[in-house]
Image 1 (cartoon, rainbow, N blue to C red):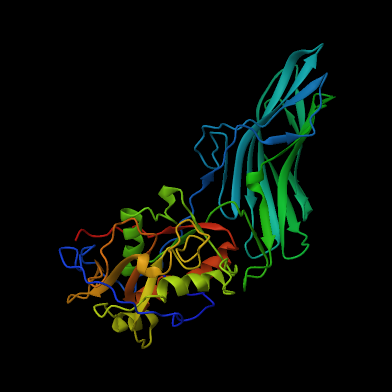
Image 2: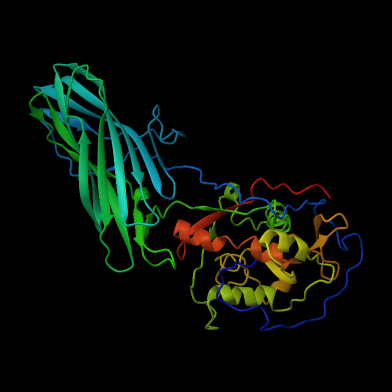
Length: 446
């Protein structure tokens, strides 16, 4: 699979057409899928962005001190919660540009070291980042959960703050900071931040400052709470993406249009189902890692993605004559005449650390893509397509480090054409992890 945003060559370099033995038997040209219908005008698939539960037992706390008359309880987070942005369960979750916290905070009044009353608050906190701007915001809703004993009023000193390269530009409290017993009004606090850059990439650490008083007694251990999982990365480095910020720890998902490009999807699906090369498959827990323009580690002087492409799809490679072409469907897709050609599709992707062309990766080839599982995509008489093993190559053991398929250039390149936009929208940078989703693709039974 070649990513369309690659900087490097057409695979013409370093070609060596070594002799390959013909292996007869039932393996020869084995059909790996049933007939797959192609929809050249299929709309782009919907984004896939599941919330990631990053709930810990507690936020990290700093700056606490002992108390004689009033204390504050830490923001307890239910470690077993699976809810995201829940209004019922305590939780901490994130996406690429949003994060949600739901927790509570309590202040207790003491008399001669004996607790005599308390006030407890429910907090629902949402962070909003902008992948196209240096502006960030946080919106917090505060609700009085309970007030008992000697406590008749409580003032909640809540503040959203940040460390690192940022400024708080405005704070808007909607409602009083003081709550009376029986108070049912919600308070909303909107805090706006701005990245103050030093260089082209910086990290911002958001945190919460919590304190206050019950009746007239101030809390003597106000606290600051933060989670490293909410660290924000702002940059101007992503090409043609301007300025923007994301939660870099969240791994975004590239969704392939498998209804338009079932041949490309079938190649990835085959690798996931039949081999240990499961990179990018969310259920395997093995994300792909974006290389960006990282230089190769083998001393060739090439960009690593170009070197990967050269080793897997140029060295010892020849297209297969039975590969199906789809000029008519590509033209329909593009809205103008296009001429299809045979090309080399690889998995894992050339612009991923896990490419078998990367000698520092987890599954490198010894010499070339001839060590991959060799397949081709055929066009059938009814205009469907099927994935087959190549009949002129060594049969697979299914322990190979990669997949290499002779397929339509339309299927190969256009299935990954949106990846360039994905990089910009998700502000994908070197060494970022990401997932691949095949938009519900299931290979039909051969």
